Length: 112
Image (cartoon, rainbow, N blue to C red; front, side, top):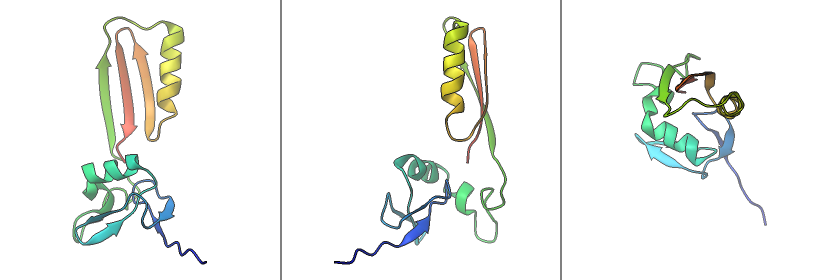
């Protein structure tokens, strides 16, 4: 028995995936994603990844879409907990910088 797998590129992360994996049809185009997370990122902002007619998307142009979020904490973290938080966040896809100072956590990341 032969199993036919057709691979397509996940437009969010660039990974090659089976065309049926986490699939969605959008504007009469078929997309597949390596994970539910990539699928949700695409569905939240599809034009960041595929552009508009006649206009390439930032992702297609190799650009970044930098965002910054500041979180307020009830109390400061210990140095050990701050280092643990920074290491955990920096391990995530797209994270550019994490700063923990007093009762604030500032995360800079690439939306794409």
